[in-house]
Image (cartoon, rainbow, N blue to C red; front, side):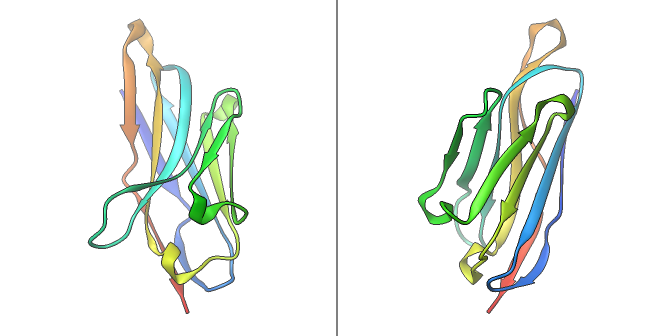
Length: 120
């Protein structure tokens, strides 16, 4: 089994910063990509940022220049540094990990989500 656990959400004023962390654990052989997605009330879940094992990153246009995704491959952990936060960044943030576990099985695992609330 593979587990994905997020941490670091909370309440912050507009213009402030937060850092989210996400750790994947379990019978993992390799992780191809990890990423962050978010879902605001009444809206669909959208991509925020992703990073591959080689360090290639992809960002939603709405967060470019404000958010930075990074990864510690040795720890199977991904981080999301969020600066200059805006009220429209308020959402539940979900971590996703895609890779391969023992016996060759692939996995695509989501975390339980962490709430980020930005007050105006």
